[in-house]
Length: 390
Image (cartoon, rainbow, N blue to C red):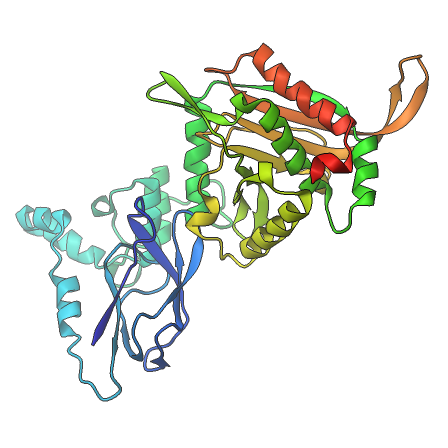
């Protein structure tokens, strides 16, 4: 018999959610076969079976969050008898503070607790997200079970009447989305940030793009940012030691915002300073495919030093991005639009203009210092040649 346990996929991982079992109870599985899909705080992964046999019992259903090392299933030989009662007994025997308090209550109160019966899994998850104490909720479901509706009404304080606004649906954030929400809140609350916006004449950049095969404008933007960082490495940094020192990195590892079924994610292209735009293009396509398949690993997100977000392909013209903490800067590229501009001799011409926004950590990068990097980006784009992208 082999116990399948919730794996720890990183030093910071505490819990995991099985989103889907890829093998059904009673089916045979070989060592190395994908057993279940796992959602962590940063990615969705397919977990392999470490031993072969028959999947005798699934102990943790999809959607339930459990700590690492929790036994989630049992694999055994085809004819091997397995006593599963001990796992069921463990579940029943788990003491809860609420249960201990119920024992001390008056008979009438104990009757109320009995009337509550159980808790629907989705209701338990929703209560955890909203910070609602389940022991204070009276269930209205069958046999007194607490439902999602009961939790929502308890949260709004309207347990005796329907909410005044009808709710279409309640959507739980994925592990990736929760991490993104936490990081963005931390960045907004703890990093004073300012944004510089410049218009960039992309005439030369678009001409260079035509000369290169199978390279997107996004690939060029990432390489240009990398070149500018090499010239002004102070933006390739982070503030550490309680704000007492700045760590400047030698490697340029660009976190690239790409779309996925779970929303925007930011995997990392490493060592862009030593890669050609063609190499960067190949690597980004691989990351995009992994993002679409929800197969990005924790390693794919690690060690980013500066972020590039390009929403120009979606028609977004400009924006004020939020720093991807703990990095010190983020570059936001907008759509390239044909725009009338006034030349040096007051002549009017039409040029492809891109709005470029660069957001900085104001704790150690001031406006003048930021202008140096922002100006370098504009200069490199407007004087681009193929040699600088190799």
